[in-house]
Length: 387
Ligand code: 13P
Ligand code: SF4
Image 1 (cartoon, protein in one colour):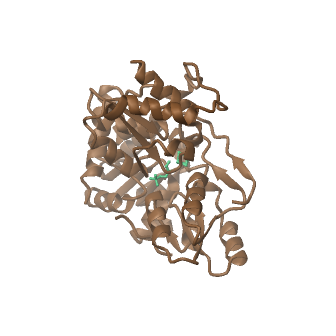
Image 2 (cartoon, protein in one colour):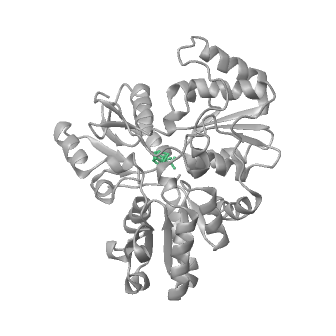
Image 3 (cartoon, helix red, strand yellow):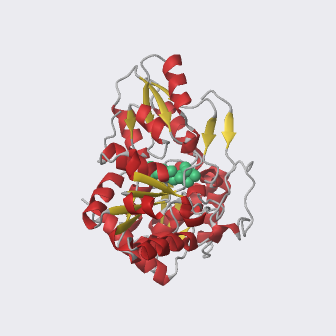
C-alpha cells in the first residue's frame, strides 16, 4: 500500500443520509421557485446568468458534484484546494459553493466580510460533520480537564466538521486538517503535545496515525459521545496517544475488505486506490491511498491498459472512467453509491441561485457568527501555514 500525499455497472444506490447539519435542517425546502428539472433551457439559463454576473461571481465545485453542476465550476478540487481557492479570490463578490455546508462555512470564514457565500441547496449537509456537535465535544474536553490531561491534548479537526467545531479547535490551540495534509497536521500536533483528540472521522485519524506516523493500533482509543464517559476508562484515556471521535463517512464507510478481495479476484492485476476515509482494513489492503485530488492525479499518471478499482464517491469515479477510456476504471464496490447530500446540488438549484444573484438577491447565504469565525479562522490559518 502506498499513501503518497500531498503534493458502472452495478445498481446505483443512493444513500439517504440525515441530510443537513442542525443549521440547515430548518430550511431544507428551497425558499424560492425552483425551475423544473425537465426544463430544456437549464444549461442555457445557467450560462446566461453566470455570464451576466461575470467576475462578480466565482463558482467552486467539489469533485463529488454532479457533472451537470461541475460544468459551471470555475475551479474544481478537493476540500483543501477549494478552501485555498476561496481565500484567494478577494475580488469576487459572490462565492457560489457547489459542495456541502461545512465547505461553504469554511469559505465564509476565509473570505472577507464584503464577500457573500451561497450554498445552492441548504439541505446539502454532511452526515459525518453532523456526528460531532459542539456540546458533545465540550463534554469530552471537560472530562480531559478533570483527568488533568487537557494540557497535553491537541485537538485536530478534519475539514469535514462544522464551524463550531473548528472554532473549538482554534480556541484550544489545535488545527484543522484535510485528507491531503492530515499527516503534516498530526506531526505538527505531536510537536505541541503528547496526545491528539481527532474529530470527527475516526478512520482518517486512525489511518494517518498508524500508517503514516507509525503509531500502534493500541495507541488509539475510540471516544463514543453516546456512551457515558465516551465509553473509556481513565486509564485508557491516560495511556492513549490518539483519542478518535466516533464518526465516519457514510459513503466511504461502505467499502469493506470483501470489496477489495472480490475485485482482486474478478480483475487480476487491478490496482486498488482508496480515500483515507475508508476503514483501516480497507486502506491497509489497498495499493494506493489518498485524497480525491491525489486519486485524480494517480489515475491521470497511470499507463494505458492498467486497471483501477477506486474506493471513493461515484460521481468522481464515473467522471474518471469517462475521461480515461484507455484505462479500465471501476467502482470498488458492487453497490455503487453517491453521496446523497453532495447530490442535493443539482442544475435547478444552481440556476435558481445564479438567477437570484442576477436579480440582486442573495439566496441561501452562509454566514458564520463573528466569534466562531474568528477562532475557526485561527485553526484554518494554522492549517494553511503548515509546510
Ligand atoms: P477531500 O475532498 O478532502 O478528499 O474529502 C472527501 C470528502 O469526503 C469531502 O466531503
Ligand atoms: Fe460527508 Fe462523506 Fe458526503 Fe464527504 S462523502 S460530504 S464526508 S458524507
